[in-house]
Every structure is written in C-alpha cells, then in structure tokens.
Image (cartoon, rainbow, N blue to C red):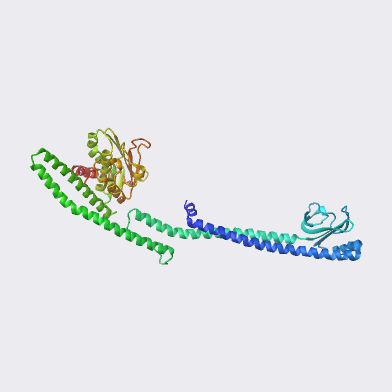
Length: 495
C-alpha cells in the first residue's frame, strides 16, 4: 500500500511525465542515428552494385553478349566467397552465366531493385543469406541480375536495433528508478509537512514545521507556513482573551444582578411583580450559564492535554449519567434506554468525561419531542471505546453537521428551544483532550424525523480483571459524590 501511495503522488507523476518526454527524445535521437547509419550503409551497397553494373555495361558495349558472359564468369571465379552475385539469362530464364542457378522467385522489386534470400531455390550452397540486387533487360530480351551479399549489413542493422531496444529499456528503467527515488525524497519532506499539519489541526497549535536549513523551496514554504501559524495563533489568542475577559468581567455584575432580583422576588407581595422578577432571575441564570460555559471551554482549550488522566470505567460513568437524566426523560414521557458494557475502560479525566456524556444526554432529551425514543450505548469496537447517544428528534441537516461544534452555533430548527449553542462545543473540547473523534449521523436516514446519533470514539484501556473491579468500585464512590453535587444549567452541568 505504501508503494501504491508513492505511485499516486504528484511528484512521481511529474517524474513519470519527464521520463516519457526524456525517453521519447532518446528514442527519436537513436532512431535518427539508426536511419542515417542504415541508410548510409545501404547507399554504399547500392553504389557498389551500380559500379559493378557500369563496368559490365562497358564490357557489353565493347565485346557484346559473348564478352559479357566471359567477364561474368571471370568475376565469379575471382570471388570464391560470392560477395557479389550474378545471373545472366535468356528471356525465358535459361542461365547463360553467373553464380546463381535460377532466377529468384520471391524477390521484391522496388524500381528495379530486389531483396531476396540466397538459398537452395536459387542454387545457393551454404547457409541462407540475404542479398540485394538490381535487374534490367539487355538488348534482345536477355535478363541480367547483379547484386551483393548483404548478410553482414543485415546483421549490423539487427545489432543496432537490439542496442537501441536495450538502450531504451535501460533508459526507461533508470528514468523510472530515478523518478521513484526523486519522488520518494520529495514525498518524505511533504509527509513531514502533512504530519505536522495534522497534529496542528488536532489542537497542537504550538508545533511548527521543521526545516533543514538549506533555504530551498521546501524550507521557504515551511518558513511561510510557520509565520502564518504564528499569526493565526496570535489572532486566536487575542480573540479568545477578549471573549474570556468579557465573560469573566460580566459574570460578577450579572451575579450581583441575579442576587438583587432574587431578593426582590422574596420581598415583593405583588403576584405580577413576583412573576416578572422570576423571569428576570431565569434570564440571569441563563446568561450566567452561558458565561460559565464559555470560561469552561476556554480553560479546556488552554490546558489542552494536561488533563488529569486516570483509568476510568466508562460504562459505570455513563450508567450514572443515565440515572441522573432518566427522571427528566420521564417528565417528557420519553422512552429512555441504555445498553452499557461495564467492562469498557479508558484513560481519561472523569469529571470532563461525565460533563461530556451529560451534555450529550441532555441535548438528546431536549431536542427529542414527547413520546420520543433515546438510546445510550457504551461498547468496545476493537481497541476503541465507543459512546453512542441516539434520539428520534428533528436531527441535524448534513450541511450543518460540521458547524454545530462551533461556539453559539444553533441549527435553525432548534432556535426556539432553550440553550446557548455551547453544549457540543464543550463536547468537542473534551473529546479533543482525550484524543478521540466525534461523528454525527442520522438515526433514521430518509425519514421526516431522521433523529441523530452522536458517536464518540475514544482510545480504549484494557487492564486486568482485578484492576477493573478496583477501578469500578472507585468510580462508583466518585459517582455518588458527583450525582449529589452536580446540577444541570442550560444543558451544561457543572463538573
């Protein structure tokens, strides 16, 4: 798979394109050399044949047919290796002179030039060889064939063709290897940037892309990205500081205002005034809950992975949260079910995990209509611990599933319901601290009320059984304390 991914990189594809261009250039160059070399050697052979024919023509003009026959026989006798081939025949192909016995039957004629094989069919003694000749008619219907043995030329052409084929093969192999090595080197540097970027996207904003100090293109890119990250972090810290300062500064006067309203509520006798004061107290509580949630998220994002990580029985923790919210579901006449594996363990911060689970269950109850159905599941999925909270409410459109984790974002269908749009933001922050993952999906796809399933995947923890029992007992004791001290405010229980 790693090799396959290597082949899919743009660097390798660019190297492959370069290889094709380079190989094509080499092929054209070698083809031109072959064409010029083979053409030159063929032209030399043709010139030798033409010179031979010119000499025979002079003898024919001076000595006639008998003189031509005599000179052909003399030349054949002087050439025992038969490098030059002759055949002088009558118009009906009866041999008069020459070192061939009969006229070639399979000869291919090109403007008087023929290429044929020297074999038994023409009276050739010895291994088969290639020949090239020219034919023409002599006065009186006589036929004359003059040629050369071109076996050496043919062999040389084959050697050149073989060398070209091997050269192309070696060129392609070296180009492919070079492209692979070059893309591998480039991919390694790109992968360093990708890995660092993924860690930064997962919340490690202090990380920066390493450089080699070569000041090449990748170093310049890394420097620019690091400067951009520094600027983004600076701006984010500025915005976070402003929002946190506002929340912190306004919480105190809001608390005083709430207390004054509560005192007024207790002191007035007018029923209408008491009702208005009660609504004002409720609004103040909602504002305080919003500011507390903002500060809570800010603290989570600031402390990052510095949470107090200990073995936690996730199954028992979720069971406690279900007991806490079961009565609230009964008030809305909802079916509240839970299937919890008590053996599911994780390494985490119990307070933060309890707050996360409480928010998920509270949201499910809040956004599920009366007589709806809510299901909470805790299980192992391979090495991961999985929490699933499903409801039969209005659900979240696919286009908004990635946006609901933003602060104060609320789906259009739920804007009329109480809340501040910070519940899932806190869930996201807790999940990120525990290096987990959140997935949102429709519980009933295609239905008018698709519902929602929130799946939280966390790294699992599997100690031995004795340690599980000890941790479970400790978790139960903590749960009793937690249940007695926890209160729900606007969907954001205080840890």
